[in-house]
Amino acid sequence: MAVSILHRVTGDGMALVGLFVLLWWLGALASGPDYYAWFAGHAGSWYGTVVLVGLTWAFFNHASSGIRHFVLDTGAGYELDANRNWSWVSMLLPIVLTGALWAFILLR
Image (cartoon, rainbow, N blue to C red):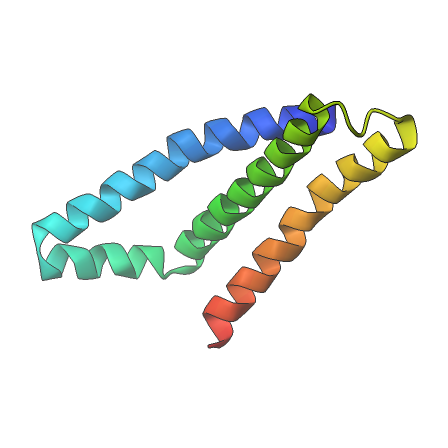
């Protein structure tokens, strides 16, 4: 149940917050270097980083639970132990992937 709820929440979050950030970024690109620098200052601040990390986690969570649901649609993984284990994997893997991606971004 938690995987299904997180799948819906992350999809809605990416649609709403991600669309806002994307449109703001595109608007900043089209508005010139001064406005883009203002945008980059906000995106690079602590609260901008929190939003971007949250969007990254939402993407990985939504993708991993989507892959889990795809496998379930093939008829595999309905045994209780397998279903429970893959549910945990689909909730923990996005944390690991988000951490790895942001470690790569921030430490390069």
